[in-house]
Length: 312
Image 1 (tube, rainbow, N blue to C red):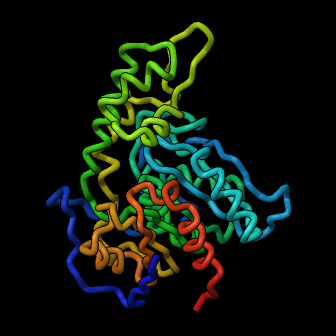
Image 2: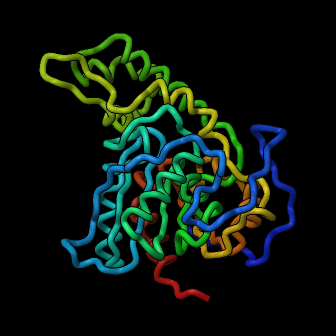
């Protein structure tokens, strides 16, 4: 694992959005206690969460940790406990909308995801929070930071960048397999795994996806997540709602952790990260996209070192 410290000054490189050639610029940021989009039509949802606080002993500034697409708060149980223990800070593991135990809604984009997190911070009166997110969660915490810089103290973005970039081709295949399970209505997880195998050949990935299955006695297995909604949202998950760092910039500290075998945070995206997040730091971990599950100790070391550093 190596750490690269980027310049504190914005890097003057044009923004590159490989997925689209035209973008609509965001409007000026208002105070964080208000919605970013005056014309926003999505409603905020009351997010499910698990609090990890060492039985009340962790009394420091809060940490929120957000999962990726098709994940849930359960994916981050071990690292949440470890962070609460090592930093003595309460850790809120969140289920984002349409995932885990949180409510479902047909709107699933980064504006809606960010608004849900902002509402969660306000509802629970969480100040000076650290926002940690992987993949979809990473873009969500970046969006929150850029929308409302005063809503958090710093962020940790794991294996994603503030750009429009197509998702790996694996994700549409996963969705196709999940839709196939819906259609065939298997009555056991083993049968569901067999259906999913052609669409997700790696056993750990299938096990991860199948954690979203529920089954009542004598009934076919069902997805607890709205697969159709998330399938329709894949293009939105590839997008990023900001493209102009002159209008939206987060000047507080930000840590970006990337997997060296993943394509989501390429060297070409670093100047873009530097313009939106001029105080960013970068840690490379020898891993693929699933950095936290593949290398939890290196992830924890990077986050702990970052959060224990004193502000300059």
